[in-house]
Length: 167
Image (cartoon, rainbow, N blue to C red; front, top):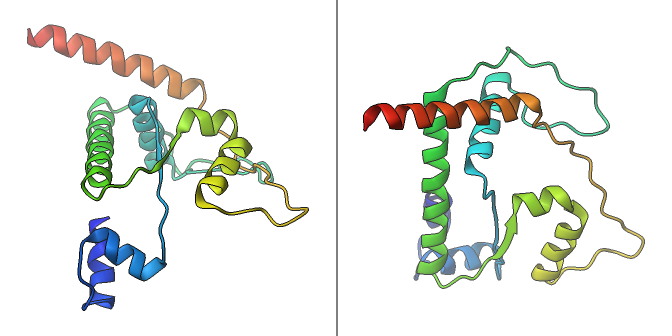
């Protein structure tokens, strides 16, 4: 957000007020959707794996993309991602509160379970309607698999072990 506000500030140097005023000046009345994942560890593991393989998404209309390299478990890297995600989540909550915004909350697990329903909720929140005859279709397929589950279990076990050793 800081980067966006800084860039917009250079385009609208005469804009007075805070971040929200600048965003509304640039984009019109702005609605905010806050997508977050309650399971930060699962998010960190997925991020860690995607960073290594360079496979970030896949649609149901394409063949599986082979990874650029085979992923390997790295406790410290996953821990860094967990901390970064928690810091980002906290920063967003603080920013929304500081500018008086009540965003539409979307939880990843709900989006994963019902992407069409959540898309409709977001459209309603934004006051938008689908054109007649237009349907929302999901195209992305979930990438998390047994390896993600194994890494989550392994991370928890190693975290417990490290905490036990330090006490």
